[in-house]
Amino acid sequence: MRRDDAAPVGWAVSTDYVDYPAAVAAMEARAAAIADGTAGELIWLLEHPPLYTAGVSAKAGDLLTPDRFPVFESGRGGQFTYHGPGQRVAYVMLDLTKRGRDVRAFVAALEAWIIEALAAFNVTGELRDGRVGVWVERKGVGWSREDKIAAIGVKLRKWVSFHGISLNVEPDLSHFSGIVPCGQTEHGVTSLVDLGLPVTMDEADAALKASFTKVFGAIEDASAPV
Image 1 (cartoon, helix red, strand yellow):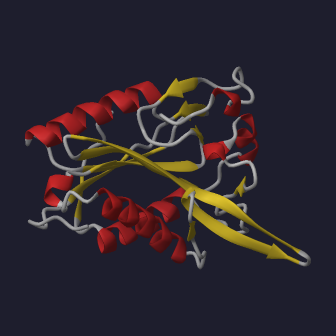
Image 2 (cartoon, rainbow, N blue to C red):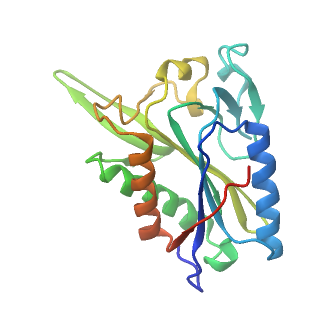
């Protein structure tokens, strides 16, 4: 899923929490500028304050505690998700006209990006038919289960992507109990720290950066749009 011209992608990191409406406005403005040829591609890493988002397939009954955190409707694919401190959100603004205009290949590349980053911590990320995102299999004496560690939800406009992925580094996992995450009632959620790995956000960012270059190509430092 590399660019035809191999131009580097901007890589920006916000160090403060970013409000969701401000992030969406900045994303949409940047995506429009990319489509118009007046701005370059951008990966934007950030954290949000605690909130729930409802994707285009969200079911009202999956919002279990509507007064717990702010709830925002989102134009991305998928159902309800949680964002909050300790979760690395990466907003992905890429021009697919320069990357083959293949939506399935794009989603597969996002999955490969996450799986490669998890491998840096000896975590085996897996995909499951009928379930969006990246999963880990957990086993103990007499039990096993599959938990979600990363979510994917993207939207395209004029073949430019926005929204993106979220990786659970060290969020408060109890915050997910206010929703049915991505409509999945049979499975749980986990994080790198929950798996017993003392991974910092900076370490997660480094793994995401290294894996992104393998899957999508070169990057260069850029300023965050907010």
